[in-house]
Image (cartoon, rainbow, N blue to C red):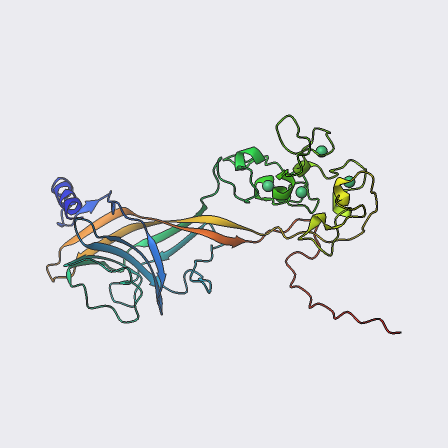
Length: 340
Ligand SMILES: [Ca+2]
Ligand SMILES: [Ca+2]
Ligand SMILES: [Ca+2]
Ligand SMILES: [Ca+2]
């Protein structure tokens, strides 16, 4: 940071305004990743550098701006963009604080109820009441080689594209295949339909294709080609165990063309997945003032604070055909013992 500040001041010589203030347009808190913690009345995004200089930068903001779940994770906001103002330099304000310390910054320095007195701060810069913070939420699993739904197929194999247009949705349930854990909507998870421990035939692309019609099981809603939909050959009472419904020993009905008993039901397997998010934080029109009474200040037209990443956050999905999806589960009725 010292080196960077030196660079900034050097640049400032070239771009000083008439009023002596400095406007710079680029700055990086190099080699650091953004972290997050939940405080008692304010939450904090921060980055720490303990390598050559002991320095930190933190964005403190009121705890009603982002929703935090019980595990301390940020609940990804519905809106892709959230903005809020910096409000001042006092401890209760939304503000950004840059500090240089005398010694190494411990992991638990931030988000303490009582601000730690150690390590000793040797230099401090704090923003004032100007500045607009923008937090842009995005998905980190929107790449060709990611597997957003965790079904064992890369996004690109499931018809994903960066533009998000004409996405493949084989079962037309409103959930594109790259987010759908059951691509053909037959109540057997894609992951299960890809597994081939029984050495079934495979199609040209090498995917399990039990009935050898060229359509791989995970995209085939009638896996055994007996003209009974797989979803009606899987019991609605035991959706976690689709192979359990067997009338001939050892072969699940949905993979046994000789068995054509139909089970009528409106049950659908759970389609919820987890996703990986990034929160990109940019601040515009800010002024840092040095807290030593010198009045020294540094201004930024735009300052990229960084990106905070979070993984494995719940992402509920409902297939359009499922009438009960998203409803709270009804309490199980006690089954009555038959009376004699
Ligand atoms: Ca899928
Ligand atoms: Ca399926
Ligand atoms: Ca097939
Ligand atoms: Ca079938």
